[in-house]
Image 1 (cartoon, rainbow, N blue to C red):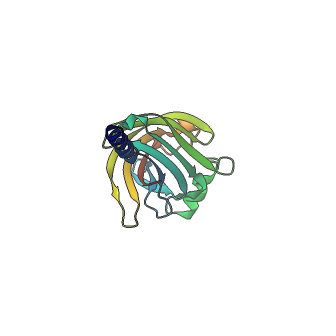
Image 2: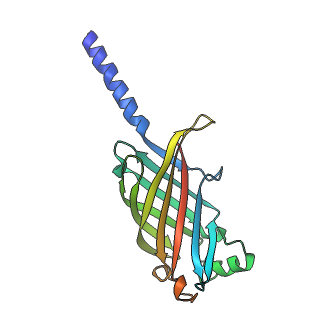
Image 3: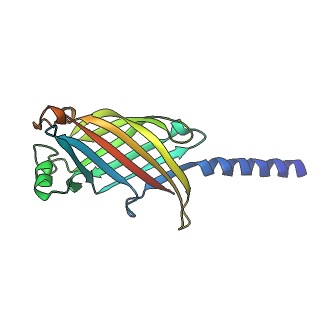
Length: 191
């Protein structure tokens, strides 16, 4: 009887330690510990920077099986902010994001290739302006641990480059501005 109880206790401890590493996280946009930024060349003379202010998302990550992870993000394209109101109005127009017709963009992972620290790549489908294309994110794990409010957090940074024409954006900004770089800083709160 003692052996059965001991075996059951060891199984319980092993299962609880496994579930402690495999977790679902909600991206912390309420506390603004996450950002979706972009940059694009302006006429080949300088970089124009901006961001999407409103988005939601979640991810799962397991240090013991990182390739089993997943990511899902929804972006309010009307929240684009390039620090210039008239330019933002133009970016929301049919020349660029057509936010009246396509007020949202989304990314859903299709494959994950990360190591136990969160470094590697995540591939998935990005839907923007009604066009869905495969993209690959270069991912770097930033860190994980307890926060001061009794929660547990994990953070990543990811980058990718998009060809605007692939998403139906062909407004002529000059030959140096055919691609846009995305930089995602993501901090999630474990659920």
